[in-house]
Length: 160
Image (cartoon, rainbow, N blue to C red):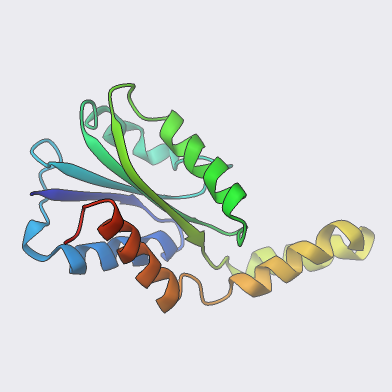
């Protein structure tokens, strides 16, 4: 089975997942999206959806089996991850078969925390939880996230 990986990663978090997939796939990995049996489509979370830069790649996915994956700065909540992945799926061509999904938290750039701290001075009730979330996100995706991603790929039949 040939598996292609298509990924948009703004800060490197989603790329860590993609790299883990590439290592796990070994000889099954292909650069040929058109000829792939399965395409792993990964994105950082951009306003709750896919990176806009993936628009061209989406057209190549018509009729394909796709495994969606990604990272988002806000996290820790499976219901939130499910909503984001639903947004990802809604951007796919209608005839795509989604064979699996995975989302985990990714760390954010330090400037984001600095912005939250400044905004918390005026509105601590709103922004203190965002600072706490930022701090929890540090180091993610971590080894446990990467292992969970590989497990999700196995569960979907993408890896043996």
